[in-house]
Length: 290
Image (cartoon, rainbow, N blue to C red; front, side):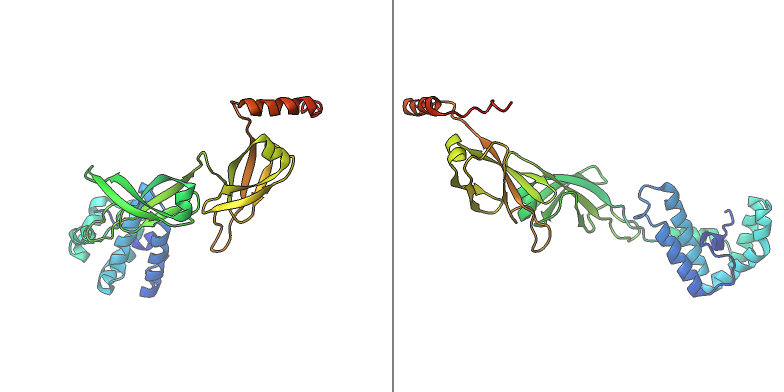
């Protein structure tokens, strides 16, 4: 096997270090190259193996003493181009064929399973109130795996739900990875989410808009009564404070009702007479200002 400079791997400049210094160096390097920080980075995966291997040897005083004899005597020669075969001979002579020991030990090292990331679409209403959902994923054997989970009430768009231990299985007794589910909130014909504010359409008759009126409108959790001022126009927004989406524990966005004035497609004879009468007496011309 090729001689590895364990001190260089742990970014230690000398072999004259304490066990505590080795532990600190190991933690720093393990944190830097941890799989959760370097997802999909094959180089980082190999690096973390070397870091673990270096720590296993240097953290045991007896193994460190044997390794230090080789490091002190031959690390310079290795840098100047010593052969792989010569190094292997020296390494085995002092450490008693540690290659097999290290490989055997490495094979038994617990390896944490990888995390899995996916996403799910949900309505604004389901995200606001919270709802149980079912997700079907393929496991490592290609079989369907059904996962039931709860969308927390008030979750924000784009947030992720973490299901502990529902990712890829660990090896050698290592913990299973986690499942991360990104929530995509979908607008629908009733509600549209913009930040924490919710927009909805408010359909009015011509007489309700012209004369003004009190009407009921459905918010996310209840019906609310609102006042329509006289002369309300299509496109006007009527604001209902604190009736939008959840910002925090006691905070809400606002609800905006966008007015759309609707005219009847069919008129009864009596309605037609009223409209004809209005036409004959009204001086209103919406095109006059254009």
